[in-house]
Amino acid sequence: MNPWAESVERAGAQRSRLPAPWSVVVTGSRGGGSSPRSSLDSSSEVVALSETLSRLLLSAASSSSHTSPSFRKTRSVAASAKVAALCSELLSRNSKLTPSQLFQPRVNNLTIRPPSPSWAAWCRSFHRLHSTMTAPHIAPILPASSLSPPDSTTRASLSTAASILQSGGLVAFPTETVYGLGASALSESAVRSIYTAKGRPSDNPLIVHVSSRSMLHDLIPGGAAGVPAMYEPLLTKFWPGPLSLIFPFLANSTLSPPKRQVAASVTAGQPSLAIRMPAHPLALALISEADLPLAAPSANLSSRPSPTTAEHVRQDLGTGRGVGAILDGGECAVGVESTVVDFVPSLEEGGLGELRVLRAGGVSAEDLEACLRDAGFGAVEADGTTGRIRVYARDFRSTTLEEAPTTPGMKYKHYSPTNARVVLVRRSIGAALPTLRDLVRITADSSSSPRRVGLMFTDETLALCGPCSATPLTPQCSQLSLSHVSLLDTSFLSYPLGSTLRPLEAAQRLFAGLRYFDSLETEEGGKVGVDLIMVECVEESGLGLAVMERARKAAGGSGELEMRVG
Ligand code: TXA
Ligand code: MG
Image 1: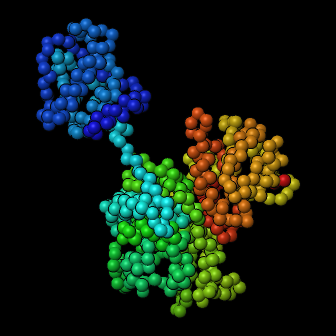
Image 2: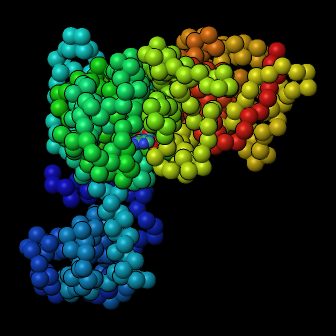
Image 3: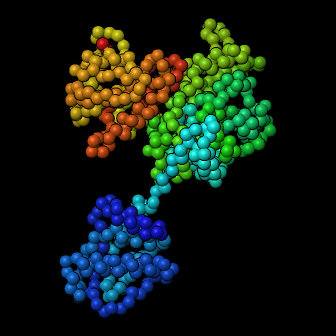
């Protein structure tokens, strides 16, 4: 079937979506029997389409109430899906067609006029329809189950994904942190299509993913010599792994130019380049099979929670976003993105400089600190504090950084569910503090009752929430499951964050839970999500720092509510 015929079929299926009211005015009289004549100075295919269109209108006009062989009345004919598809097809071939060209003005003595008000507006509505009728590309999900040793399915999926990347296409792939949307970092057009697919602001630079140290060296000025000394122990200890390092990337560097030049859009005009070596075996295999460094942001629509499964990617980018394929490697082990660090040289002669954590992530600040200390980069400050590491928001703030698009997740909205409001809840002790029951009342919005509230609490807190309802919320220790109770006209659904003893669980579940509540369906299949998601604050050490940073952003900086349990 040719593409326009497919459009016609689809439009038929989508009839209810046609802009209403749609009518075509037909005036004239039947009879005369002259054969259709083309008024188009155009290809025979366009003429044929136009004639078909005219005949369709004619038959629609004569099948409406009056079927007299001769009439001179103006008839409104609801544009059928076929008429719409044909008009749209004709206009897509030549957007400058006039009404008299689009319709054969005299087919069997009929004069056909398009509806008012204006031809231009009418064309626009055809075009809008046309765009909804054009087949959206659906990204196939490539299964990749086993890598050691790789089975034949995994090998085939990797080879398909690699060839898509080599021809400048987009492939979403799993990493140990979150799924990435990858494209060749060496191709300007490929990198630009990442921004388009995600709806990402063009001034927000991308991390380049490599599969070997030599690939890293090829990308930075000076090669191996361009790696700051303080990065060496970090590379040894944390690569492959969730650590992105920022390298100076100055055009006028005195170092030798990089062997492989990344596209300008990767750095979005910044004098630095962020690089990481992911630990997921499929990511590494894909990069080396394609033999390309991959620019890859998280594979979500801009501002949505990052994806931790192939299904999350499919929901955001699977249809009509130009993604060539989604490589399915199961759930991501870490669940929050990589830690982004920047080395800042010392201004003092012989000074070692410092490491700034611009985004907390999969490698904790404590582990970075310990690694540097073990490698002889430790420091004891005059005030007795130790360390070479300064964590953004914890140890320092800077308006310049906050306004710069280069600073991860600061300038742009992040991690937001589309439907629900997110509030942070901190478990605390004190008789005067509100209970969950009180919080529900406090946060109630009279317009949206009865409400559905999603709870992302730790297992320990859930266990103590029992008294707030007749049916206690069941703690789901390490297994994810849903509990559902009603209280004060409010339905509670729970997506537990796991045990406080295992902070990795909260990291793994945060994004998945936000997405889960956002896409909840009613029994009838309508999307309703929840009205409110309450996320419990976890301890801000280790991975907890990254979890809280993401949770705060999801809550839009709305602060924390204290809550008494038990
Ligand atoms: O774990 C991760 O890092 C995931 C996976 C796919 O590898 N990627 C990821 O990419 O989170 P993205 O684009 O969603 O976040 C990368 C952040 C951005 O917020 C960007 O501002 C920052 O890193 N970034 C990229 N290049 C930078 C640079 N040259 N200087 C400072 N920040 C940079
Ligand atoms: Mg992201």
